[in-house]
Length: 229
Image 1 (cartoon, one colour):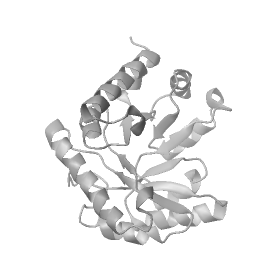
Image 2 (cartoon, helix red, strand yellow; image 1 turned 30 degrees about the vertical axis):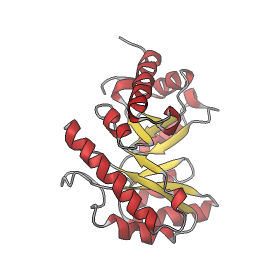
Image 3 (cartoon, one colour; image 1 turned 180 degrees about the horizontal axis):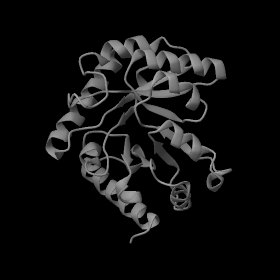
Image 4 (cartoon, rainbow, N blue to C red; image 1 turned 90 degrees about the horizontal axis):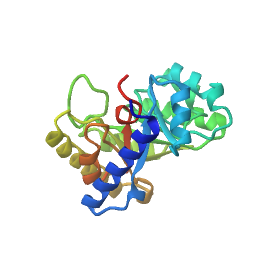
């Protein structure tokens, strides 16, 4: 069995190759190691191999991992990438670098409320259901522009961009990644701070190369690093 360290090295080389094909700098793409369902010890191994950004999807598991002795004292940068319910926001607001899965303005409002209470400024992304699948979370592509407009006025939070989970077919996924990029461009046109809208969180173990070709700035990789769950 390959180690987490060697898996990370292989993924980073694939990222570098995809960036070369896209004519982009590798520094433009942040690798988020998706550690959901994996142990704190596995996160520690990835950390020791140089990984700093990690993604979690389940609130209770995330909270337990934050307090795990294996990670004590390590300045891990946590991204919450799963569907986030409004009533769970208060539990994670002071522990995350960024929230990726905001799919309702009401959840962004709750994030803002809790950030104000903690005296924090929290970055977040709006999740968009570009595949238009009924089983997926996310704002519809036609409603995200209005949602973004409402989010711009919220205090102590900053909309940084968009996130999506694409269709399993790579060719279809690439078209969806392109649509997400175009949607972000449209949002920038009406944004009070267009430069702040710099993030496209898209691409996972099976399609991150296509995502990089279409402008991904954050890719979320779990299986290719930690193995099957």
